[in-house]
Structures are given as structure tokens and as C-alpha cells.
Amino acid sequence: MPRTRLALAALPFALGACHRDADCGLCASAGRDAGASEADAGGETGGAADTGDAVDALVVAVIGDFGEAGPDEAAVAELVASWEPDLVLTVGDNNYFVGGADTIDANIGQYYSAFISPYTGDYGPGADENRFFPTLGNHDWMTDDAAPYLDYFELPGNERYYELARGPARFFALDSDSREPDGNTEDSTQGAWFAEAAAAATEPWRIAYFHHAPWSSATHGDNPEMQWDWAGAGVQLVLAGHDHDYERVVNGGVLYLVDGAGGARLYPLEDATEGSQAGQGDLHGAVRLDIADDELRARFVTAEGDVFDEVRLLAGQPLDAGAFAEGGATLVPEDATWSWWGADYSPPDDWTTPDYADADAWPSGPAPLGYGNGDEATEVDAGGDDPERRRVTTDFRTTFEVEDPAAFEALLLRVQRDDGAIAWINGHEVWRSNLPGPEAEVDLDTPATLTVWDWFETAWVDTMVSPDVLVAGANVLAVEVHQASPESSDLRLAATLLAR
Image (cartoon, rainbow, N blue to C red; front, side, top):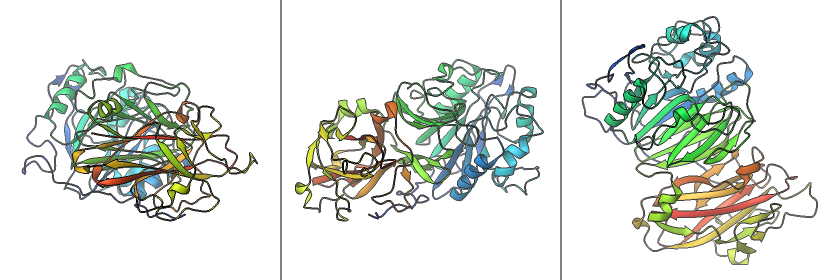
């Protein structure tokens, strides 16, 4: 059942021009005061970096808790290099175990020297222009107050926290460690610097990144000192690490990604934090950001190239189901009636489009659909009586009417899926989760990457969608659900589509 897909390296949008003045360099805060004040104990406060000429498409790799030389870090580094990113950001713990000068080049330069400038280590010539922008983690602070880290890199401002900009995005690299001389709370010197810098930013995207995750379901749990008013500062995306896993959390309209699976030993997720939507502690990988003026796409990609999680944001729109529900329209309700295809062969190629005319012959019923959970409104055939040879893939579709697509600025798709899924609107792929990447062929026998378990089985997983995929009249939302194994004990599909 091959599909037409967007290559992982491609973008479904064009990158717009800089929003700053023409004489600013490239979106670099030229002419801006680099620091709000002198830091009490740390000298100069954070500054800004000019990262060079404008780019046609901004690709950003984000790695965390990675600096432990070995095959796992090497596999993630190979993945990152294959993206040819414009920037590599880190969310801390760059140099295990104690941040020493004797390990830093083997832990960082061995794998990422091609992005670092100036580079004076033993692993090649380095980069002509610096594209590597780290943040401090607790392990980086363990030797001489982070002196090996500060000596190894040449970064803006005081080098512990700073800002940089490229194209449509401004990034705020912060130090979340309690040993930060300028403090790590919102009312600290560092917090005041950030507030002023964020208020001065004019780019459509503001992204904060640091080590200690504000929200986390794994070993270390939540870090309340970093639960700043990110939405009030105009930040749409917060990147962090500390827990060695990947997790997606949505709170207050802000997307939080825990990205601590860059190479060190992984941690299990344990107790669901508020807003937890997707996560795993089994596979190493990295977050990839594709950023344009009007859209940001974030994906956690495993070292093997599978897309475990994907989420899109639209500029000016909070990732907030409540805001969509209060001020918009429900195009597909949570209890919508879906038709499903459960044959041992693929449906026709146009089954995801309004042109397909035979869906009325499919079995149908209201959501949630599936088996094995006990709360299904519609039980779906598992594909036979043998519990060890259940069907791997089941296709679902529902129709909805739209009078005027131009009336909407944004769509919010919310899905419950067990285990992996791909979603289309009118034949356009708009989301995938827990499956091989878009460049790979996915067919009836392709298993999901990992088993979805516990609260993730019924969590609503959100992504924004451009209303450009809608048509006047009949529309189709189609979802293909993949099990991790033919022995899976349960299947689930529920979805809702909101518009505003």
C-alpha cells in the first residue's frame, strides 16, 4: 500500500524574508544592546549571535544528554549530519560524567566538530562558521564551575545564556542550573535579561531551550523553577532535556519537548505529568525543526530514521484545544462516525480522498473504535481469532462538510491512536506518529515503531494543520493505524478536527 509522501528533508512551505530592518545583518540583533545589565556575579549578561547569511529553509537539529562517547551517540550524530542542519542546538549534558577537560573533545568534538567554529580539537578542521549552540547541563557544571565547557566553546555574551536568530526564528539559550551565578528563576538577573530580549524580538517564532525540563513524566520529574510564563513572553516552543527520553507536553498553549535521548543511558517514563501527550524511553534520537514564517514542524526522529512524533505549529495560533473549541468550529466531533477497512489487502489508492465513492460499503460506527480496551463505542474486527496473528494495519475514514474554507485561519487535529498512525485530509498527509519516516514505504505489514502504553493510549495528541487542505463541500479525514506487533492486545482510534 505505497503512498506518495514528502521527503524528510523537504518542506511543504516556502521560507519568507527577514522581519527585521534591511541593515540588521541576518536577523542578528545588530544595533540591539546585547545585555540588559551587568550580571552581579557572572559579568556580562547574555548576548546575541549573527549566524550568517539568510537561508531558503531553516533546518535545526536539537540534541540533549548526548555527551557520552559510544555507539549510541555516534548513531544520533550520523542522523543529525544527514539532515545538513543550519543549526545544532543542545539542551545540556554535553560532556559526561563530570564535565572534565579531559573528556570534552571525545564526547563532543569527535561527533560534532564539523559544526563547531572555532574548533581546536583533535577531530578534523571544524567548521568555517559556527553552527553549534549548546546550553549548560548539570554534568557540565561539575568541574571548576563549567570552565572546560566555557573554554571549549566561543559563544555570545557571557556564554552561559544568550540569544541567536536565523530567518524567522529567535532562539533563547538559557542556563537552568541552580549554580548559574545570575540565577535560574523567572525573577533572577537571567530572567530579567530574557524578558527584555523576548520583548524586543520581532521574529514570528520565539524558542527557548535549556537543560531542566519544566514538565516531565520520567525520573527527574517536573522542574517548577523553569515553569516561567513562556506564553506571556511570546514563546511557542520550549526545548529541554535532563530526563533521558523523549516526551511531548502541551500546557497553556505552549509546546514543550523533552529531548534527552541523544546518546546517554535512557530513562523510562513513569508518572504522567500534566499535559503529557506522547513519549518514549526506548530509542535514542534527536528533534528536527523545520521552520518557515508561517509554520513550524517538530519531529522526534529515532537514530534508525523513524518518526516517533510529529507536531506542526502555525504562527500566531496557540496549541490550545480550549481556544479552538471556544472560538471556532468542530468539523469532526470526538464521537464522529467512521468507516473502516479491515481486509487483508489494501484499499484503492484514492481511499483518503473525497473522490473515493465506495466507503459506504465499509463497516462503520462511532468513535472511539478498536478492541481490547473495554471502552470502545465500536468494536473493530481484529483480523481473525488467533491472538498472535492479528491484523497489523486498519484504515479509517470519515467525511465532513465545509461551506467556506477561507473562513478559517487554522485547524487543530487531535488523535488518540494505538500504536502508530498516519493522517490525511483530502489525500494530503498532515501528520504521522510512531512509524518509519515519509521517505520510507509503509504498507499493510509495516509495524509501528514502538508499543504505545499506559496513559499514551488515550492521550489526545495534537497537531495544527493549514486550512489550505480543505475544499468547499465534502471533505475526508482518513487515518491509518498500525500495530507494533501482530500479537498486540488492543487497537484504538479516535479523532477530532477543530477550526478557528
